[in-house]
View 1 (cartoon, rainbow, N blue to C red):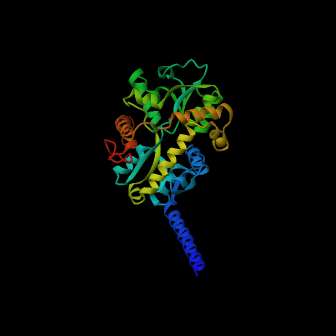
View 2 (tube, one colour):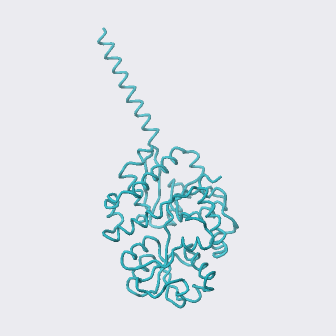
View 3 (cartoon, one colour):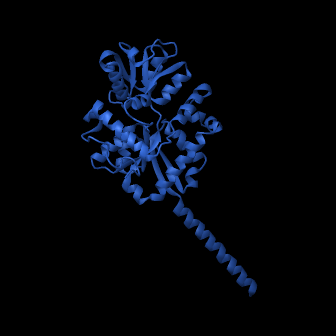
Length: 327
């Protein structure tokens, strides 16, 4: 009789343990759907999260969904097909001013720069006058607007009016620069890094221009974006995702081995991989949300003046709540 009772006790204990583990796992592994471009640089961090199971560590199951273009990710976010996307705080502010409840968590402060061949005689923005300049991102690209603003302030130079400007896709402009078809090129940060690895040098970055125009620090160019309503309904999912992102950044900031593992994802090797690694690390945000928000507020005023309503919409100032946790 005693043996029967003991067996029954242990059987019940095992069943309770299995049940408790199942309940805990069900509660912990909340799915977080993120929509990103298939070949975007954010995939380096997301791949690191999945490979090292940082999502599981922090109680989420990260579901990565790939899209062909930024507009497609924006549509997916607005339709509720994904929980998180990657974009910039300026877009978030404009959406909030229109009644949306999007909010922003900084991801990277890596930005574009004007690149010139190593032996180019161009030494300053003033030397660009009359040159053939490639610009990625279009006429309203924030980096382009900031650099134009600085050229006008320091050299009374209207880059758009006094130069031959070639707008184009980042890889095409990088190729044209390599072939010597451009005197200088303003490109996205990762293409700038690849150019740097192949004999180009930085003339000026958008962060340099931003600081010269009044920013006190380095504001994140892009970040993770989600609906405030979703975040408040899923606080552990948001906290888990941010913690997983932080772990991945910490690893990529210190581990060269992990960068070698990522080489096929980055699609680079040798010196090119090293430069991309170093520039990525430079872009890991280290300012507080309050500092980021303060600099974004300053930059918003500059960009509103340079780009007008076509860029920022009707709002005169950065919308409250643009940065998650700034209210």
